[in-house]
Every structure is written in C-alpha cells, then in structure tokens.
Image 1 (cartoon, one colour):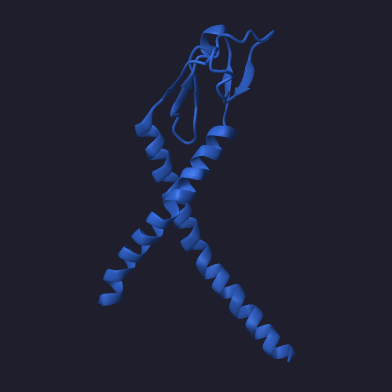
Image 2 (cartoon, rainbow, N blue to C red):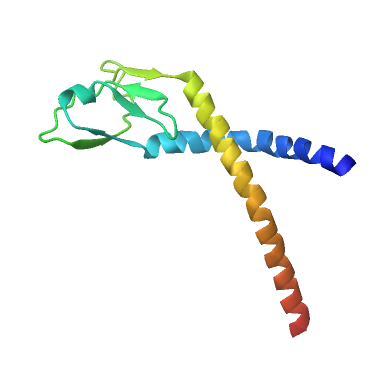
Length: 129
C-alpha cells in the first residue's frame, strides 16, 4: 500500500524538478514559432508561443512586398524604437506547466526503454565474456 501512495508524490517531485527545463523549452518554442500574415491588418496582431500564444506584437511597421508572409518573433530592436509587445503571463505559465507535464510524461515513458536497453546490454556483455 505504501508504494501506491508514494508514486504520485514521486511523480510530483519529478514534475517540479523538470519545471525549470520546461521554462527553457517554452522560451525556445517562442523563438522557434512563426506567424503567417495574410494582410497588413494581421501584422498588427502577431501572436507567438506554442502551444498557447502568450506574446503579442505589433509588426505593422514592417511592409512586406507580398502576402502571405511568414515572420518570426522579433526582439526589441532598440530602446529608442521599441516594437509594441504584450505578454500574457497566465498563458505563459500555462505553457510552462504543459511543457513540464509533457517532459515528465516523456521521461516516465522512456524510463522502461532505457532499463530494457541496459538489461540487454548487460546480458550481451556477460554472454561475450
């Protein structure tokens, strides 16, 4: 019985330890995300972030020559000429929590595979010896 009770606590501990890595993954996904605009009006409301959009930028200052155009997330160009950027903290935290859950699930799914590979590697090395 004790083992059944401790498993959710162990998963929760692993989840909490993975959250900093999930925050880095969320930031990377923000940088890797792109936005496709089909008109100049769309450029004024460019949203970035995966899986939930948590950053909104006004990219209407850029004038592409043709549409549709795909643009990536833009950092602040300069302090004297900033890009209007809004952040949704709730969606950003939700992204971190979702990424943490996905990383924890992947870790627990990969653990039996790694253990099986270790056993296979140990068995083959003992046969060779």
